[in-house]
Amino acid sequence: MDTTSAVIPARRVAPSDGGVRKVSRAWYWLALAILAAGVLLPAVWGVTSVDGALEKADAFPRAAVPGAVTVTVTDPGDQMIYFTGSGDQSPAALGLRVTDPAGASVPVTPYDLVVKLDLAGDVGVAVATFPAAAEGAYVVTSTGNGAPEGAITVGTNVAMDTLPNVLSALAVMLLSVVTAIAIVIVTLVRGSTRERS
Image (cartoon, rainbow, N blue to C red):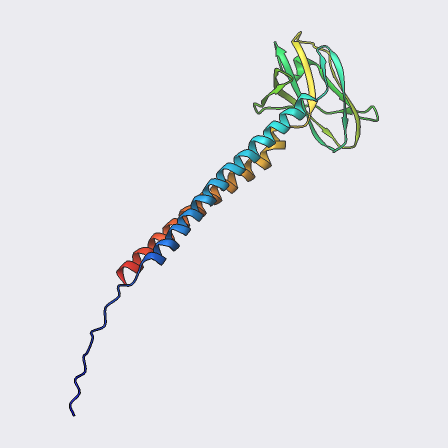
């Protein structure tokens, strides 16, 4: 007995690219998240560091010229002398002298770089530094030989205090941007390779 069998052709099912698209979009979103976090968070970190340093500077001890100011050093290291006011701002004109906790004279070195900051509402200019080798009270005296009008303020180098945090924030930003770009490029290359195959 003859039997007739029907052959049903199998349907070709086109491979779905939905999964590929989802993976690609996920990588793009990851790149965007890294970029956003890597830019915003370090920016906040840098601004906060600068604001904190400026608030610290507002509390630096100060005295009118001529006059004397005492600064208590708890972390030995170079200290900065700032001047706010008008007239000759050189250490010689200000007549700066520094004595350490033992009463010995401490050398004062003119500061050649331009560093300006807000000191309790006044613009302070870094004019000199001196080494504070030990903890204790240092007395900074200004005789005002050059008759400048203003005040001297003594504290740490605010620019150097904030520099490590600012540089670290910039490094994180750069790394985030490079990482995000690398993810996008790799995703595009993989997508292009899959389309060709």
